[in-house]
Image 1: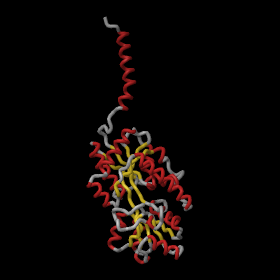
Image 2 (image 1 turned 90 degrees about the horizontal axis):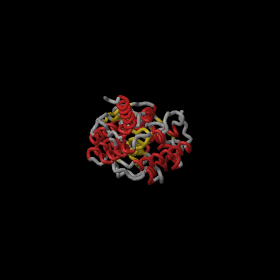
Image 3 (image 1 turned 90 degrees about the vertical axis):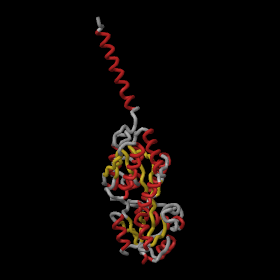
Image 4 (image 1 turned 135 degrees about the horizontal axis):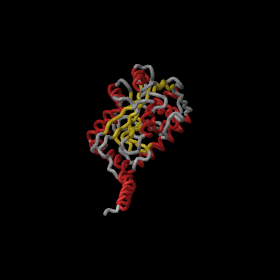
Length: 329
């Protein structure tokens, strides 16, 4: 005769064991487990950020063996996508294509207007690429390099019109940094985006601006604009003939970048695997070629290096916003 009480106890024991084992089994499930990974992009399809994200998605898909898709969530200068990523499940299936506006500029320029803390709610994985900014001038200004620009600006305070693609963008803050570090008075004319700013410069309505390589270099090489320098600490391999602005203004540095970040709480093993894939594919010849068309220099640094960079740049921009007394409505 079967002992029903013993059978019931055994069943309860098995059920209890399953309850204990289930979370452990879930925690040890492989990543990625065949489901798609998405990269959140805070800008519209077709732009430089979108193109960069799709290059990254293709390479990660090849390396991880799962689909990697791009989800464009434009809005609020890229902070909408950052906010959505910060609130996403930290399971390794939601990544953010990060850029300065939403990560290192936001704490000082959008304080109280964003629903996430970049240094607490998001975890850095790796910087994928840097975009050096080039200082370009309309030929009618009559200067050939950064030193001549500074000399002319000091001789004619407030007379040089300096365009940018927005006050709280890398280009806009580059103008304010130049004013502070060089001690010059130029008129900062912010536009709503790089295209109208460049159009105004090409038309001679403004005199000078910091622009990205993808549009600056073709215009420099055609003679439509004069290349005065590059805003990276050293000369850029994209145009080694141009001096660094820092050669005329010591310590000057202004550029943009893209990197990957994930929600806080994402397993360290997932972060490490993503970083390893990035470090590997940025060395591929086809990636370097495509990055060059975007005016981007491949990076692929470690998570620790990226985190240190983000901290330093956030401090730099916070100080700059305070010193320049920049007000954001």
